[in-house]
Amino acid sequence: MVELKFITGNVVNLSPHQVSWLTRQKHTSSWVLIKKQKSETAKSEMFLYKASDAIDLKTAGVVTVPQVHQTQPFVWSEIFERISPVDDVP
Image (cartoon, helix red, strand yellow):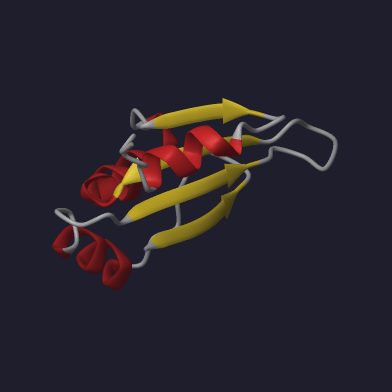
């Protein structure tokens, strides 16, 4: 499960229900993927967090250390590999 968010500042608007659900899912492959764009002409940033970071995201925002942080252009393969790792099985 990936919770998608869009922000223009550092605050991540997670509802109490979302924080609760993500915290209960902290041992699963659940994530929060955030796209940040300060203005229409600014380059976007992407932040990927584990579900277990939900409380910190709600209280501190994207100053919380992410699993992945990228500036546009995004390397989607890095994000997908982190969310759903592929084992190298022959």
